[in-house]
Each structure stands twice: as structure tokens, then as C-alpha cells.
Length: 573
Image (tube, rainbow, N blue to C red):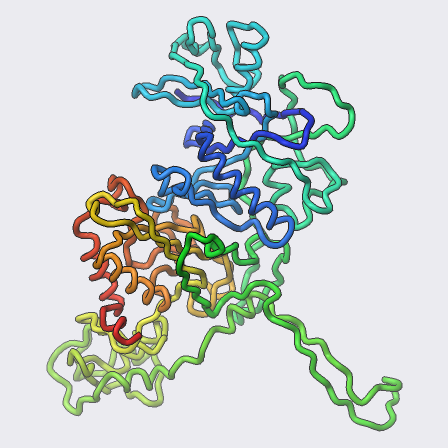
């Protein structure tokens, strides 16, 4: 049943508490409420984040819905963008939060549903359910939904919905279930205007809404009659939350000058770690080279010496004056990089031995004969390696132009490791470009399909938005991190525990994620998976990202080995 989006609804009522309903929007623009249990979980997390947003931290966290309902394991609500993110497909849907009086339909657990073509029942959006309850309470047996923007009438006597244009009828029903969660309405510190749950007020600044400016476009629609208390009425606006751009993306020059960023950006601080929850027994912090929390770098005071003696223009100047050094910007911190990296020529020499007589074969990098000049001699300059130098890798003995190997190395991560382009043998310790974040581990007794003889290992990856470092595609530009924290599952058996330990190694080496272009959404400069597959669903394998999958553990071991992460790495720890 196609339903047009309804206009924003306004509920006017008194009291310090309200009922919160969270909804997601489908591709046709229709809003669907989450169940009361899921809404309770979302609201609990949201209130916690809201307190940090207006007090100690940033509204930059995500809410994993699988913790409230295992069937929703692939879904995460990303609070900064007000979107529902599906981890396995990358699909994003808008979400919103509605507040209702306690005596409303959601407050009493009443949900109206319509019968779809496939025989399933679909709930109306919460504002429609509440409006239907209002009209029925007034004795109206035929309710027109036109005031809410819908072209339907609901007949309470026959329990049918009729399209006023086509006269097509559907069955409807009224269901009573658990009430939706009650939440406290508390205005943030410094808030002198009305208390509001809209995205603009939550994400616009660190001090809450500005009372002296026009913020909303409101449409007054019928609401429940409530006792009239003149003072302190609170108005809530239930509009669609739009995406929020924290700052204008600056254009970087060739010299990568540091732009001045908006310090009120809600992505500027790392989100609260899930490690604060007592369920997580172990956590692995990864402190990458590109982003530090705001305020983590301290300003140092140094002394600048001035020459003694008379001065014609400066007047009396003391011998030493303390100079306050400015804090480096987030971009400057990101571009500063990490530990010094070895010289590229030295890396090539570490893993090769030069051949005096080149073999009669082609260099598979430049596709030229090894007996002639390297095909990269015109674009790669080296004082230590000549254009005709040929060498072979010490383990696999594959031969290449040394200048071609140098060009290949310089085009990669330049981490001191080398990978044979022919057989993929890795020399040294391969590392990636994964942004900083946290990996946490939880164990619980529920079994995965196909592994009923053991419990389950839950891995939670959490990466905040940040600034790209010199190893990323666009150094100095912001990157997004959609759908974090991301939850992944392993069986808690011997092989699952081995995979877990190897994933810990891969995390420390920054190999699990990278910054690039999403293959599902097309978004650039965002955190994406990096060729090590994870299971993001527990109880089904419709998309290939869940269980049962008898070959998964062997496949992921092979993928880890391709990144240089093997059981030998565990023995070296």
C-alpha cells in the first residue's frame, strides 16, 4: 500500500515526561514504527548519548538494534546522520523520533495495522495510530486521513481502509500491546527556549537551541484534549530529520594547507566506547596516526629570548617572554603521520638479491623484457637503483626490474613490507590504512546455526569519523564512518577462537578496514571493509553474511593468510 508522507505533526501537552516512538522511512516515503521493545532500547541509548551531547561528550554514537531484537542484527542507527544503516548491504534509511503524551495511543500500546498484499500486517506510523484513537474516542466511526496527508478513509465498524480515488479496500485492525517507552523531557544546559527533540536542536551546537531565532516550520493538527495549564507549555515538532553536514569541506591546495574546521562539529570527538559496558570482557585499542581527540594535545609554553640593550620602537621588553604555541589542528595532526618509515630503496634491497645476468623472461610489472630498461625508468627516479638493474625476491625467487619493484612499493602503503606480484608471498609485516578505533569482544551462550554445540563470540568494531592521514586517498579531508559500531559473529569453538586471535592481529596491523569508496552506496572517503569477510548476521544466511555457512571459517583463514596473518603470527606474540 503506497502512502504519501504526512506533514509534521505537533503535539501540545504539559508535564515533564512524554512517550517516545522511533520510526524508519522506506523507499516510498512511508514511516514505520519500531516495536515497543526496540524503541525502549533505542530511547535508552539515545537519552544516554543526548546527555553526553549536551554535557560531557558528542552525539556521535551508533545504536546496534540487534541487541534489542536478534532479527535486527544487521541494522544500526547512526545518530549523527539520523539514518538506519544495514551493515551487509550498506542500505541507509532515514529515522526519526516522535514524542507523544502519556495518554496517547503509543503511551497505551495501541497500534493500528493494515493488511498488505502478501498477507502480512503492517503498522501505520505512530501519528496515524494516535489520530485514529482520537477520532474513535470521539465516536467517529468513519475517519478521514486527509488532515494527515493521506488519501484514505478508515471505517471502524467494518475495519477497512478505502482509497478515496480508486475505492480499493484493505482490511485494518487495532492491536493492543506493550506501551512505548516513557522518557523525561529535560532541556539541555543553557536552553532558554522550548524543549525540543528535532535533529536541528540536537546536532546544531553544543549548547542547545538558540532561543532568539526561528527554528521550525510547524503545522497545527488535531491533538488529544489535555488539561489547560497556562504556563510552561511545551511544543514538539515531529518532522523528518535531514542529513547534517558538520562543516563545509575545504578545498585543499597542492601543499595540503590545513583548513580551519568548525569546532562544534559533532564528529570531532571519538564516540563513547562500548567498552564501558561491563559485558565486554576484552578490548583492543588501535591508536592510529591520524586523529587525536580534541583537547588531547596540550599547548606548550616556551621562552623567546630578546637581545638586551636599548630599543627604539619596542619600549621596555623583558629578557624573556613566554610564548603560547597554538594547538595543531586536526588536519595537521592527521597529516603529521606516525612513526618514520624506512627508505623505499632499502626495503627493496632487504628482500631481493641483484642478478648480474637477467633471465630471458618478461618483468610482469612493466611487461618489458628483463634484459632491457625498466618500463618505469621514465617515471621513477632513484639514485641507488639503476634503470637496467634486475633482482629476484629471496623467498619465491621471482625476478623483476628492481626499479619496477620500487615503483610498485612507492605506489602502496610504504610500510616496510613487500608482496610478490606473481605469487603474493609477503615479505616483512604487511600493515594497512585502517583508521583509529576500537575492537571489543563479548561471549554469550546462544548458539549460531550450524554450530549448536558451542556458544557465540561477538566482535564489536567501533571507528569514529575523522580526518584522512597521509596514507589515505585524500589526505587532510574528512572521512565518514557509517554504521559503527559494527557487530560480527564467530562460533565459540576451537577454530572460531583461532580466527578471533588472528582477527586481533589483523586489527592491530590496520588490515580489517580502510578508507575508500563504498561499493554499495557509492559514497567516497568513507570507511569500508578490506577483503577480510565477516559474518554480520546470526540467525540466517539469506545474503551470505550469516550462518549456517560450513566453509566460512576456512575461507576467512585463507583471507587472513593472504594479508600475511597466519598462525605463525600467534607464536611470535
